[in-house]
Amino acid sequence: MGNFLSTFLSDFAELPELADRFRSSGPVPLSSPLPVGDLAADSIAATKLMASLLHLVRMRMRDPKASDVPQVNIAPQLVAGAYRSDQLFRLNGNPAPAWAPLSGFFASSDGWVRTHANYPHHEAALRSLLRLDGPATAETVAHAISRRSALDLEDEAADSGAVMSAVRSPSSWRGHPQAQTLETEPFISLVQQGGESALHSLGSADSYAPLEGVRVLDLTRVIAGPVATRSLAFFGADVLRIDSPGMPELPWQHLDTGQGKRSALLDLGYKPDRDRLDQLLTDADAVVMGYRPNSLDRFGLSPVELHSRHPGLVIGRVSAWGQSGPWAERRGFDSIVQAAIGIAQIHADGTGRPGALPAQALDHSAGYLLAAGIMSALRRRHLEGHGWTVDISLARVAQELLAQPHSAPAEAGPCEIQTVKAETSEGTVTCAAPAISITGGPNRYRWIGRPWGADQPEWAEPRSASFQR
Figure 1 (cartoon, one colour):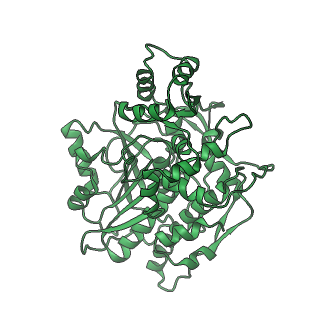
Figure 2: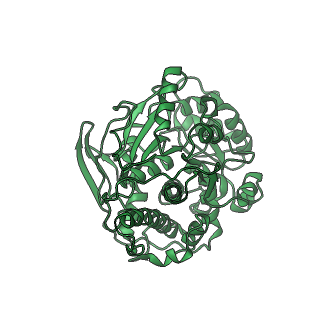
Figure 3: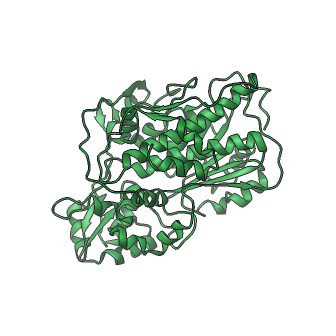
């Protein structure tokens, strides 16, 4: 066990001896001077432990003398594959275009920056920031950035809607006000909401899936949030992802994180669609949000309003920089956070060019840990009542990773990464095999390759009579 799992369990207020239920057959093959393999293993272990606790709740509905939590085993090759899912993904045998031409590291006049322009609107904002008319190439972007200060570009990008970060050293980030804000917050936050509320049953005791009958509304994009909701779907939840019709997800990215979920479109600027979302929330057990803090408040989706209208709701939120502090509302992605806090500098090559972790481990860890926190909250709601809010940020995960001892990166030895393949309406999809199965629970995705926006904005089917909301 790495040093991370004990921290997770402490933040969840779970029994520390649960960590003794975790076993791994070896290190996770993710090579880095930072203990990213331990972070990955412990994040997956936390997800499996919380699912196992929910499974035990169902078992005890049938037999009050049911045994304790079974041992949770980690398969290093499955964990490495899950974290490298974007690298393993294939559509009709073709790899994913994971990075757009204008996304990457560029030398500024006084250092380096990292840009993120995978989405069309972010590319347009970057071109506008750099005063590039019409189509741009990596070369024209590099030339424009080379004449500007990294920190000036970073601030101007934040004001203009572009996504860019200066590459800092770890010590420089530690002195930043946002870093100091995050230091005062837990790794992952679980906060009880509201006064007394009725208990909320987990549903039929006969189900082998820990979340069977649980309804989850998915308001997330990119990787971290979708990984969290994909994990909840894997354990049996009815997960309905809602997107704006004007903001399509990258097709391959949706296929790589959409397993087991349904996908519908609603325009929250249109009142009938907003009313429909509120109807969905009335029957939801959890809502997961992955947009910038406060960006959905204008639609009545702040935690205060949600808990007021829907007592007992579990709210899960993932952000780039945290829910408070001077950078809370800045745009950010895994690669941008790595650059800002010093991870990119630690991975620099011999020429001084910044580098990156071997996988988008901040995104994946935040996603799995958010799923674990939501499952912990759902179990508490079942046993004690109340609504809950669960928060995690990529930057807080990154700071915890940086706080651990560094070492020379060990070469990742041969590792047989497992994938699964499915024939879908989109073509032949190959993706990483799930790494979170538990004893007595599901061991495969319910489906792969459901198209983006293909479903109606409604829950899949009525709950069984045994499920009380």
